Image (tube, rainbow, N blue to C red; front, side, top):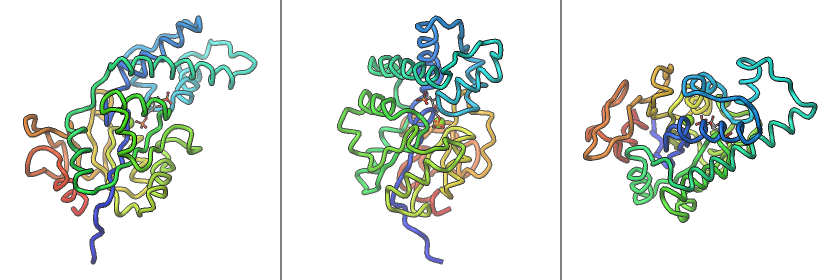
Length: 255
Ligand code: XBP
Ligand code: MG
């Protein structure tokens, strides 16, 4: 059977490209709550539970439904959530533009290698587009936005992860088949989404996601690794070099 050629890498952002949840998104939510005179405060532990729902607006609704039922909702509740989320995005982009959070090990190297070897790049994330822009600009320079043929983000699709919609959208915009792309994820919701789009997926775990069920992943790693910072394979394919490079991506893709 002919094996498809690997043509594109599709990256999740939060937790995968950078560890943005605990010290980025969570902090920005709390700043927005304080500025809005709400007594809500999302601790590191509570935020871990709230991460089971993707999307900031959806996460705030989930918090009220499951952890703060006493809160008296305003008449225009939808508008209230939208405004609160705008404030959160403002705080998040301010925090990130100060260079708060670095890329995870191996991400910049792998993006550069992919470009050098003619692979195409895309993003498929639940987060707001502005958040992706500021992270990429701050860490890789404004020009890096042009490295990605597709930046699929936020409300561009109706159903967020774990629905496969955002990956389906990215693949369609790339004008490729799922069988020509490899996805990078960090969470259960993320891999349910990428696998739902029929993508082979490399998982790099983080503190919030290390206990998640990653069945279906091609490989689960602690991080992508660097030549001087070997990664640990938790399950799946062992890269020869102890870090993920493009030949390792091809081996995983073909495996
Ligand atoms: C990321 C998210 C996002 C961010 C918040 O999930 O769930 O919702 O936490 O972003 P994934 P917004 O990494 O699986 O895409 O507040 O901009 O929605
Ligand atoms: Mg993620």
